[in-house]
Length: 223
Image 1 (cartoon, rainbow, N blue to C red):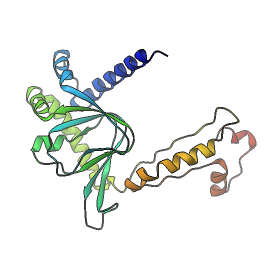
Image 2 (image 1 turned 60 degrees about the vertical axis):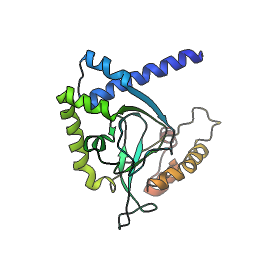
Image 3 (image 1 turned 180 degrees about the horizontal axis):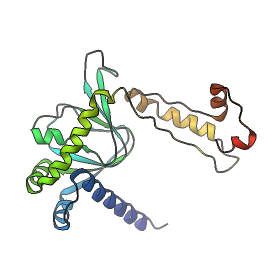
């Protein structure tokens, strides 16, 4: 495979993700405005475990999540503190903005944000973000709807984390899917501890023992 072709394909894919994310966050933008806005956005690749922003830092930019998942936390000494005095505020996924409230208010960052896995983000400088809202009022309306939806869920987000399932399916009989899943679980221990979540490996035998059900040999191949 040609490395140059692979790089071009990745760049084109991220470009499509960026345009789709802009439409999701700000609503449909006319082609002329989009053409002026795109050069002002910079792409950032953030490895899993790396910190995007820290609580108390200046709110100098807005980020859009093109792929991956991040975790937002805030310092807390109260009963809700879950990890080293941190309160888990919630997870941030593809198509969501990060840091927009601080840019709008001019206040320092109110939370720290860390990548739960490898992420690709688009960065928009605070001054360019403000200019966009002033130029296209409907973009602010679309963003406000996202903020309202986020705030309406904030009270329970730390206690109702979504379940995420990863299926390990061997394509050859010689491959040990259980061993691979076990190694994968071990590699996620640090991330899951920071997110105050748990990981588990569910095999056919474990599910059968837990539910007390018998599974035919013919059915075992599809579980």
